[in-house]
Structures are given as structure tokens and as C-alpha cells.
Image (tube, helix red, strand yellow):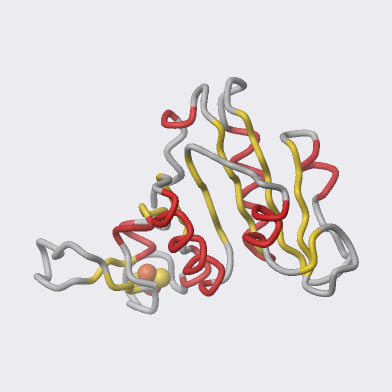
Length: 164
Ligand code: FES
């Protein structure tokens, strides 16, 4: 599979957005990004079990949203972004599909380049089970359909290229 494109972010302001199981990949990405990147890490948790919070704080400025409102912004990651009036040149995101769908919409509305990781949907990871197929905009040259296998073609896609 591929990874998030790092070279696009040198000297830029980025959002690293992680929800639930999408948080660990964002920590990894924050560690890999160039030092010249301004890293705004927006993470969504269910409650005050803020796993990886200290590690995230070592690698960027952290903004927290919780579903139950116990820490940070009550609501989701986009609520936190709006509440804090944050802006970015590039978005990287990983998490549950409804969250990614909302972020894709937000990025389109704001005209921000947005990369999302769909690894949540993977099963076999080697291209055999087709459990990870998602709808894409362009036609697959091999099968001639609007499909991509996340484990082979992804897991990272430009948000505008995939249907969620
Ligand atoms: Fe099985 Fe992609 S995870 S084909």
C-alpha cells in the first residue's frame, strides 16, 4: 500500500485529523512530517480516555474533541476546528467513514487538498478478498470499473477521488 504524501507539506500548515482508531496513524505521520510543517493535530475521542495524548503533544499542537464533552470541544473534530478557527493548506485524516465523509465535504467547501486513509476497511490486506473495494471516480484500467482496492491502491487517497 501507499502512505500519506509528505513532500506536499514542507513549510505548510496542515491538519492531522484522527478519530478513534485513526489516531495512532496520525501520531506516526506527525513524527514523519518535515520539521518545517506546522502541525495542528485534531483528535476526536469518545470520552476522557485520551490515549496517545502526550505523544501527540510532543509532535504538534493538539486540539481535542470529545463526544461526551468531558475534554476540549464537545462534539467532533470539525466542531473543534470551527470553534478554534483553525485553518490549513493540507489535510491528512484517518478514522471512521462518517468522519471522513464530513472532512471530505469540509475540504471541498474550503478548497483544501485533503488526503484520507481508508485502512479501517481492510480485511485480507493482499488484494484477494475484495472486502476493501471502494468506489472511485476514475475507471480501473484492469477491471474497467469504478473500483479501487484500498489495500492495493491505497490506503491513502485524495478525498476527491473516492466516494465515501
Ligand atoms: Fe482484501 Fe483488499 S483487504 S482485497
